[in-house]
Length: 412
Ligand SMILES: O=P(O)(O)OC[C@H]1O[C@H](O)[C@H](O)[C@@H](O)[C@@H]1O
Image (spheres, helix red, strand yellow):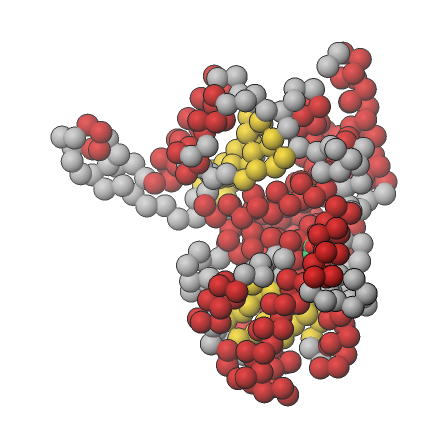
Protein backbone atom coordinates (compact mmCIF):
# COMPACT_ATOMS: atom_id res chain seq x y z
CA UNK A 1 0.00 0.00 0.00
CA UNK A 2 1.46 3.39 -0.95
CA UNK A 3 2.04 6.21 1.52
CA UNK A 4 -1.02 7.96 0.13
CA UNK A 5 -3.16 4.86 0.49
CA UNK A 6 -1.90 4.41 4.06
CA UNK A 7 -2.81 8.01 4.86
CA UNK A 8 -6.21 7.35 3.30
CA UNK A 9 -6.70 4.31 5.53
CA UNK A 10 -5.67 6.30 8.55
CA UNK A 11 -8.30 8.96 7.85
CA UNK A 12 -10.90 6.24 7.17
CA UNK A 13 -10.03 4.75 10.54
CA UNK A 14 -10.45 8.14 12.22
CA UNK A 15 -13.77 8.50 10.43
CA UNK A 16 -14.95 5.05 11.45
CA UNK A 17 -14.04 5.70 15.09
CA UNK A 18 -15.82 9.08 15.04
CA UNK A 19 -18.93 7.54 13.49
CA UNK A 20 -18.97 4.79 16.13
CA UNK A 21 -18.72 7.39 18.90
CA UNK A 22 -21.18 9.86 17.38
CA UNK A 23 -23.79 7.22 16.47
CA UNK A 24 -22.95 4.35 18.82
CA UNK A 25 -24.48 0.98 17.92
CA UNK A 26 -26.63 -0.56 20.67
CA UNK A 27 -23.88 -2.88 21.97
CA UNK A 28 -21.51 0.06 22.57
CA UNK A 29 -23.63 1.84 25.17
CA UNK A 30 -24.91 -1.41 26.67
CA UNK A 31 -22.34 -1.83 29.47
CA UNK A 32 -23.15 1.65 30.77
CA UNK A 33 -26.93 1.42 30.38
CA UNK A 34 -27.64 -2.26 31.07
CA UNK A 35 -29.49 -3.17 34.27
CA UNK A 36 -28.39 -6.65 35.34
CA UNK A 37 -31.01 -6.51 38.11
CA UNK A 38 -33.68 -8.68 36.45
CA UNK A 39 -31.12 -11.31 35.44
CA UNK A 40 -29.58 -11.36 38.92
CA UNK A 41 -32.94 -11.49 40.71
CA UNK A 42 -34.21 -14.38 38.61
CA UNK A 43 -30.85 -16.14 38.97
CA UNK A 44 -31.13 -15.82 42.74
CA UNK A 45 -34.56 -17.47 42.55
CA UNK A 46 -33.10 -20.34 40.53
CA UNK A 47 -30.24 -20.79 43.01
CA UNK A 48 -32.53 -20.48 46.04
CA UNK A 49 -34.82 -23.15 44.61
CA UNK A 50 -32.04 -25.68 45.01
CA UNK A 51 -31.91 -26.27 41.26
CA UNK A 52 -29.56 -29.09 40.35
CA UNK A 53 -29.63 -28.43 36.61
CA UNK A 54 -30.03 -25.43 34.31
CA UNK A 55 -30.61 -26.09 30.62
CA UNK A 56 -29.80 -23.17 28.32
CA UNK A 57 -31.59 -23.53 24.96
CA UNK A 58 -30.35 -21.30 22.12
CA UNK A 59 -28.10 -21.17 19.07
CA UNK A 60 -25.73 -18.72 17.34
CA UNK A 61 -25.52 -15.42 19.21
CA UNK A 62 -28.07 -16.80 21.69
CA UNK A 63 -25.66 -19.51 22.78
CA UNK A 64 -22.03 -18.80 21.83
CA UNK A 65 -21.65 -15.89 24.26
CA UNK A 66 -23.12 -17.71 27.26
CA UNK A 67 -21.06 -20.80 26.41
CA UNK A 68 -17.89 -18.70 26.17
CA UNK A 69 -18.57 -17.18 29.60
CA UNK A 70 -19.33 -20.52 31.24
CA UNK A 71 -16.36 -22.26 29.62
CA UNK A 72 -14.03 -19.47 30.70
CA UNK A 73 -15.15 -19.21 34.29
CA UNK A 74 -17.19 -22.27 35.26
CA UNK A 75 -15.79 -25.70 36.17
CA UNK A 76 -15.29 -27.56 32.88
CA UNK A 77 -16.57 -30.92 34.16
CA UNK A 78 -18.92 -30.20 37.04
CA UNK A 79 -20.50 -27.44 34.93
CA UNK A 80 -20.88 -25.73 38.27
CA UNK A 81 -18.67 -23.94 40.77
CA UNK A 82 -18.47 -26.16 43.86
CA UNK A 83 -17.36 -23.18 45.94
CA UNK A 84 -20.15 -20.96 44.66
CA UNK A 85 -23.03 -23.46 44.53
CA UNK A 86 -25.67 -23.29 41.86
CA UNK A 87 -26.88 -25.85 39.32
CA UNK A 88 -24.95 -27.66 36.61
CA UNK A 89 -25.27 -25.68 33.38
CA UNK A 90 -26.08 -27.54 30.15
CA UNK A 91 -26.36 -26.15 26.61
CA UNK A 92 -28.91 -27.43 24.09
CA UNK A 93 -27.63 -25.57 21.02
CA UNK A 94 -27.69 -27.72 17.88
CA UNK A 95 -30.74 -29.75 16.86
CA UNK A 96 -28.77 -32.91 17.48
CA UNK A 97 -30.89 -35.50 19.30
CA UNK A 98 -27.85 -37.19 20.83
CA UNK A 99 -26.85 -34.02 22.68
CA UNK A 100 -30.32 -33.26 23.98
CA UNK A 101 -30.94 -36.88 24.92
CA UNK A 102 -27.68 -36.86 26.86
CA UNK A 103 -28.74 -33.73 28.76
CA UNK A 104 -32.06 -35.36 29.62
CA UNK A 105 -30.14 -38.44 30.76
CA UNK A 106 -28.26 -36.51 33.44
CA UNK A 107 -30.58 -33.64 34.40
CA UNK A 108 -32.83 -34.17 37.42
CA UNK A 109 -35.97 -32.75 35.82
CA UNK A 110 -37.69 -32.33 39.18
CA UNK A 111 -35.03 -29.70 39.97
CA UNK A 112 -34.27 -28.35 36.54
CA UNK A 113 -34.78 -24.85 35.17
CA UNK A 114 -34.79 -24.09 31.46
CA UNK A 115 -33.77 -20.81 29.78
CA UNK A 116 -34.98 -20.52 26.18
CA UNK A 117 -33.03 -17.77 24.40
CA UNK A 118 -33.96 -16.46 21.00
CA UNK A 119 -33.93 -12.85 19.86
CA UNK A 120 -36.22 -13.49 16.87
CA UNK A 121 -38.40 -15.85 18.88
CA UNK A 122 -38.69 -18.34 16.04
CA UNK A 123 -35.36 -20.06 15.32
CA UNK A 124 -36.23 -23.64 14.36
CA UNK A 125 -33.45 -25.35 16.33
CA UNK A 126 -34.26 -23.42 19.48
CA UNK A 127 -38.00 -24.03 19.24
CA UNK A 128 -37.45 -27.73 18.55
CA UNK A 129 -35.15 -28.07 21.58
CA UNK A 130 -37.67 -26.13 23.67
CA UNK A 131 -40.60 -28.37 22.64
CA UNK A 132 -38.68 -31.54 23.52
CA UNK A 133 -37.50 -30.20 26.89
CA UNK A 134 -41.02 -28.86 27.54
CA UNK A 135 -42.47 -32.34 26.97
CA UNK A 136 -39.95 -33.89 29.35
CA UNK A 137 -40.65 -31.25 32.02
CA UNK A 138 -44.42 -31.69 31.71
CA UNK A 139 -44.03 -35.43 32.29
CA UNK A 140 -42.43 -34.67 35.62
CA UNK A 141 -43.98 -31.37 36.71
CA UNK A 142 -47.33 -31.43 34.88
CA UNK A 143 -48.88 -28.92 32.47
CA UNK A 144 -49.55 -26.52 35.34
CA UNK A 145 -46.24 -26.75 37.09
CA UNK A 146 -43.62 -26.72 34.37
CA UNK A 147 -43.94 -23.07 33.22
CA UNK A 148 -42.60 -21.67 36.49
CA UNK A 149 -39.30 -23.42 35.81
CA UNK A 150 -38.95 -21.94 32.33
CA UNK A 151 -37.47 -18.50 31.61
CA UNK A 152 -37.62 -16.90 28.18
CA UNK A 153 -34.93 -14.47 27.02
CA UNK A 154 -36.18 -12.72 23.91
CA UNK A 155 -37.25 -9.46 22.26
CA UNK A 156 -39.38 -7.27 24.56
CA UNK A 157 -42.39 -7.56 22.24
CA UNK A 158 -41.77 -9.58 19.06
CA UNK A 159 -41.68 -13.32 18.55
CA UNK A 160 -43.52 -16.48 19.54
CA UNK A 161 -42.04 -16.73 23.03
CA UNK A 162 -43.97 -13.61 24.03
CA UNK A 163 -47.18 -15.24 22.77
CA UNK A 164 -46.43 -18.44 24.69
CA UNK A 165 -45.53 -16.59 27.90
CA UNK A 166 -48.79 -14.62 27.58
CA UNK A 167 -50.65 -17.95 27.60
CA UNK A 168 -48.58 -19.90 30.13
CA UNK A 169 -46.96 -17.27 32.34
CA UNK A 170 -43.22 -17.91 31.91
CA UNK A 171 -40.95 -15.18 33.25
CA UNK A 172 -39.27 -13.23 30.46
CA UNK A 173 -35.95 -11.38 30.25
CA UNK A 174 -35.53 -8.85 27.46
CA UNK A 175 -32.83 -8.54 24.78
CA UNK A 176 -32.63 -4.83 23.82
CA UNK A 177 -33.99 -4.53 20.23
CA UNK A 178 -30.98 -2.40 19.20
CA UNK A 179 -28.42 -5.07 20.21
CA UNK A 180 -27.78 -7.74 17.57
CA UNK A 181 -27.65 -11.43 18.53
CA UNK A 182 -23.90 -11.87 18.05
CA UNK A 183 -23.35 -8.70 20.12
CA UNK A 184 -25.72 -9.76 22.93
CA UNK A 185 -23.45 -11.61 25.39
CA UNK A 186 -23.66 -8.72 27.90
CA UNK A 187 -27.47 -8.65 27.82
CA UNK A 188 -29.53 -11.21 29.80
CA UNK A 189 -28.46 -13.68 27.08
CA UNK A 190 -25.13 -14.06 28.84
CA UNK A 191 -25.74 -12.34 32.18
CA UNK A 192 -28.61 -14.58 33.40
CA UNK A 193 -26.77 -17.92 32.98
CA UNK A 194 -23.64 -16.30 34.39
CA UNK A 195 -25.50 -15.21 37.54
CA UNK A 196 -27.22 -18.62 37.82
CA UNK A 197 -23.76 -20.20 37.89
CA UNK A 198 -22.62 -17.82 40.63
CA UNK A 199 -20.49 -15.66 38.34
CA UNK A 200 -20.26 -11.89 38.76
CA UNK A 201 -22.53 -10.27 36.14
CA UNK A 202 -21.69 -6.78 37.41
CA UNK A 203 -17.97 -7.40 36.85
CA UNK A 204 -18.61 -8.54 33.28
CA UNK A 205 -20.39 -5.24 32.63
CA UNK A 206 -17.73 -3.27 34.55
CA UNK A 207 -14.97 -4.60 32.33
CA UNK A 208 -16.95 -3.87 29.18
CA UNK A 209 -17.77 -0.35 30.40
CA UNK A 210 -14.06 0.30 31.04
CA UNK A 211 -13.35 -0.68 27.45
CA UNK A 212 -16.12 1.60 26.16
CA UNK A 213 -14.75 4.49 28.23
CA UNK A 214 -11.23 3.92 26.91
CA UNK A 215 -12.50 3.79 23.33
CA UNK A 216 -14.28 7.09 23.92
CA UNK A 217 -11.08 8.61 25.29
CA UNK A 218 -8.63 7.15 22.75
CA UNK A 219 -10.81 6.96 19.63
CA UNK A 220 -8.80 5.67 16.66
CA UNK A 221 -5.75 5.15 18.89
CA UNK A 222 -7.44 2.47 20.99
CA UNK A 223 -5.76 -0.94 20.42
CA UNK A 224 -9.10 -2.49 19.41
CA UNK A 225 -9.54 0.16 16.72
CA UNK A 226 -5.90 -0.07 15.64
CA UNK A 227 -6.37 -3.83 15.42
CA UNK A 228 -9.21 -3.32 12.94
CA UNK A 229 -6.82 -1.45 10.64
CA UNK A 230 -4.13 -4.13 11.11
CA UNK A 231 -6.43 -7.00 10.16
CA UNK A 232 -7.96 -5.00 7.30
CA UNK A 233 -4.50 -4.18 5.93
CA UNK A 234 -3.37 -7.78 6.24
CA UNK A 235 -6.39 -8.87 4.20
CA UNK A 236 -6.75 -6.06 1.66
CA UNK A 237 -3.06 -5.33 1.20
CA UNK A 238 -1.26 -8.60 1.95
CA UNK A 239 -3.91 -11.15 0.92
CA UNK A 240 -3.92 -12.63 4.40
CA UNK A 241 -7.62 -13.38 4.62
CA UNK A 242 -7.60 -16.03 7.33
CA UNK A 243 -7.61 -14.74 10.90
CA UNK A 244 -6.62 -17.41 13.42
CA UNK A 245 -7.51 -16.72 17.05
CA UNK A 246 -5.36 -19.01 19.22
CA UNK A 247 -5.88 -18.70 22.98
CA UNK A 248 -3.25 -20.41 25.12
CA UNK A 249 -5.90 -21.60 27.59
CA UNK A 250 -8.48 -24.35 27.18
CA UNK A 251 -10.91 -22.12 29.08
CA UNK A 252 -10.90 -19.65 26.18
CA UNK A 253 -11.57 -22.09 23.33
CA UNK A 254 -15.24 -21.15 23.25
CA UNK A 255 -14.33 -17.45 23.32
CA UNK A 256 -12.68 -18.15 19.96
CA UNK A 257 -15.89 -19.85 18.77
CA UNK A 258 -17.92 -16.79 19.87
CA UNK A 259 -15.50 -14.54 17.98
CA UNK A 260 -15.77 -16.69 14.84
CA UNK A 261 -19.49 -15.92 14.58
CA UNK A 262 -18.96 -12.25 15.42
CA UNK A 263 -16.29 -11.74 12.74
CA UNK A 264 -17.71 -14.05 10.04
CA UNK A 265 -21.34 -12.97 10.25
CA UNK A 266 -20.53 -9.26 10.58
CA UNK A 267 -18.04 -8.92 7.72
CA UNK A 268 -18.73 -11.79 5.28
CA UNK A 269 -20.78 -9.79 2.76
CA UNK A 270 -20.52 -8.52 -0.84
CA UNK A 271 -17.62 -10.92 -1.45
CA UNK A 272 -15.63 -9.32 1.41
CA UNK A 273 -14.51 -10.33 4.88
CA UNK A 274 -11.70 -12.52 6.17
CA UNK A 275 -12.20 -16.07 7.44
CA UNK A 276 -11.93 -16.41 11.24
CA UNK A 277 -10.63 -19.68 12.65
CA UNK A 278 -10.36 -20.85 16.26
CA UNK A 279 -7.37 -22.80 17.53
CA UNK A 280 -5.99 -23.56 21.02
CA UNK A 281 -2.42 -23.52 22.28
CA UNK A 282 -0.51 -25.65 22.95
CA UNK A 283 -2.84 -28.30 21.52
CA UNK A 284 -2.84 -26.94 17.97
CA UNK A 285 0.93 -26.71 17.91
CA UNK A 286 0.57 -30.43 17.36
CA UNK A 287 -2.12 -30.04 14.75
CA UNK A 288 -2.03 -26.81 12.77
CA UNK A 289 1.18 -24.88 13.45
CA UNK A 290 2.91 -26.76 10.62
CA UNK A 291 0.41 -25.09 8.25
CA UNK A 292 0.85 -21.71 9.98
CA UNK A 293 4.66 -21.97 9.70
CA UNK A 294 5.11 -23.37 6.20
CA UNK A 295 1.74 -23.26 4.45
CA UNK A 296 0.28 -20.50 2.30
CA UNK A 297 1.03 -16.91 3.34
CA UNK A 298 -2.69 -16.24 3.81
CA UNK A 299 -3.04 -16.11 7.60
CA UNK A 300 -2.60 -13.81 10.56
CA UNK A 301 -2.17 -15.61 13.88
CA UNK A 302 -3.62 -13.83 16.92
CA UNK A 303 -2.45 -15.36 20.18
CA UNK A 304 -4.46 -14.77 23.36
CA UNK A 305 -2.01 -15.10 26.24
CA UNK A 306 -3.06 -15.51 29.89
CA UNK A 307 -0.34 -14.21 32.21
CA UNK A 308 -1.67 -15.69 35.47
CA UNK A 309 -3.52 -19.01 35.32
CA UNK A 310 -6.23 -19.37 37.99
CA UNK A 311 -4.97 -22.84 38.82
CA UNK A 312 -1.48 -24.23 38.33
CA UNK A 313 0.12 -27.61 39.01
CA UNK A 314 3.76 -28.26 39.87
CA UNK A 315 5.54 -30.86 37.74
CA UNK A 316 7.10 -33.37 40.14
CA UNK A 317 10.82 -34.21 39.94
CA UNK A 318 11.36 -37.67 38.43
CA UNK A 319 13.64 -39.61 36.04
CA UNK A 320 16.54 -37.19 36.45
CA UNK A 321 18.68 -39.67 34.48
CA UNK A 322 16.42 -39.45 31.45
CA UNK A 323 17.41 -36.13 29.84
CA UNK A 324 14.21 -35.88 27.78
CA UNK A 325 11.99 -36.26 30.85
CA UNK A 326 13.82 -35.16 33.98
CA UNK A 327 14.18 -31.54 32.83
CA UNK A 328 10.44 -30.91 33.35
CA UNK A 329 10.57 -31.58 37.10
CA UNK A 330 10.45 -28.48 39.25
CA UNK A 331 8.62 -26.40 36.67
CA UNK A 332 4.82 -25.95 36.56
CA UNK A 333 2.20 -26.75 33.91
CA UNK A 334 1.26 -23.07 33.59
CA UNK A 335 4.91 -22.13 33.12
CA UNK A 336 5.27 -24.73 30.34
CA UNK A 337 2.05 -23.45 28.69
CA UNK A 338 3.31 -19.88 28.63
CA UNK A 339 6.83 -20.83 27.56
CA UNK A 340 5.32 -22.68 24.59
CA UNK A 341 3.12 -19.68 23.85
CA UNK A 342 6.18 -17.47 23.64
CA UNK A 343 8.10 -20.10 21.67
CA UNK A 344 5.33 -20.26 19.06
CA UNK A 345 5.23 -16.48 18.82
CA UNK A 346 9.00 -16.34 18.30
CA UNK A 347 9.01 -19.18 15.77
CA UNK A 348 6.23 -17.53 13.73
CA UNK A 349 8.01 -14.17 13.80
CA UNK A 350 11.36 -15.63 12.77
CA UNK A 351 9.59 -17.46 9.91
CA UNK A 352 8.12 -14.18 8.72
CA UNK A 353 4.59 -15.20 9.72
CA UNK A 354 2.65 -12.14 10.98
CA UNK A 355 1.21 -12.58 14.45
CA UNK A 356 -0.23 -10.43 17.21
CA UNK A 357 -0.94 -11.04 20.89
CA UNK A 358 -3.84 -10.12 23.14
CA UNK A 359 -2.58 -10.31 26.75
CA UNK A 360 -4.99 -11.11 29.58
CA UNK A 361 -3.63 -10.70 33.11
CA UNK A 362 -6.02 -13.42 34.25
CA UNK A 363 -9.27 -15.04 33.14
CA UNK A 364 -11.93 -13.28 35.20
CA UNK A 365 -15.28 -11.58 34.63
CA UNK A 366 -13.83 -8.09 34.31
CA UNK A 367 -11.15 -9.00 31.78
CA UNK A 368 -13.61 -11.10 29.81
CA UNK A 369 -16.11 -8.24 29.71
CA UNK A 370 -13.39 -5.91 28.45
CA UNK A 371 -12.34 -8.40 25.76
CA UNK A 372 -15.91 -9.00 24.56
CA UNK A 373 -16.43 -5.25 24.18
CA UNK A 374 -13.04 -4.68 22.52
CA UNK A 375 -13.66 -7.39 19.90
CA UNK A 376 -17.17 -6.07 19.25
CA UNK A 377 -15.75 -2.55 18.74
CA UNK A 378 -13.06 -3.96 16.42
CA UNK A 379 -15.69 -5.79 14.38
CA UNK A 380 -17.93 -2.73 14.07
CA UNK A 381 -14.97 -0.58 12.96
CA UNK A 382 -13.92 -3.30 10.48
CA UNK A 383 -17.41 -3.17 8.95
CA UNK A 384 -16.73 0.48 8.11
CA UNK A 385 -13.31 -0.31 6.67
CA UNK A 386 -14.74 -3.12 4.50
CA UNK A 387 -17.72 -0.97 3.56
CA UNK A 388 -20.30 -3.52 4.74
CA UNK A 389 -23.14 -3.41 7.26
CA UNK A 390 -21.70 -5.26 10.25
CA UNK A 391 -25.10 -5.64 11.91
CA UNK A 392 -27.23 -7.69 9.56
CA UNK A 393 -27.04 -11.26 8.26
CA UNK A 394 -29.11 -11.54 5.09
CA UNK A 395 -27.11 -14.55 3.92
CA UNK A 396 -28.62 -16.92 6.50
CA UNK A 397 -32.20 -16.54 5.29
CA UNK A 398 -32.09 -18.76 2.17
CA UNK A 399 -31.38 -21.93 4.15
CA UNK A 400 -34.09 -21.06 6.65
CA UNK A 401 -36.74 -20.64 3.92
CA UNK A 402 -35.92 -24.09 2.52
CA UNK A 403 -36.03 -25.61 6.02
CA UNK A 404 -39.39 -24.04 6.82
CA UNK A 405 -40.80 -25.30 3.51
CA UNK A 406 -39.44 -28.84 3.98
CA UNK A 407 -40.72 -28.97 7.57
CA UNK A 408 -44.19 -27.87 6.48
CA UNK A 409 -44.28 -24.42 8.06
CA UNK A 410 -47.40 -22.67 6.74
CA UNK A 411 -46.68 -19.99 4.18
CA UNK A 412 -43.29 -21.42 3.08
O1 LIG B 1 -31.40 -15.42 18.73
P1 LIG B 1 -32.09 -16.00 17.52
O2 LIG B 1 -33.09 -15.07 16.94
O3 LIG B 1 -32.65 -17.37 17.81
O4 LIG B 1 -30.98 -16.18 16.37
C1 LIG B 1 -29.93 -17.09 16.57
C2 LIG B 1 -28.93 -16.90 15.41
O5 LIG B 1 -29.54 -17.32 14.19
C3 LIG B 1 -29.63 -16.39 13.13
O6 LIG B 1 -29.97 -17.11 12.00
C4 LIG B 1 -28.33 -15.63 12.86
O7 LIG B 1 -27.48 -16.41 12.06
C5 LIG B 1 -27.55 -15.31 14.11
O8 LIG B 1 -27.07 -13.99 14.02
C6 LIG B 1 -28.40 -15.48 15.36
O9 LIG B 1 -27.59 -15.24 16.51
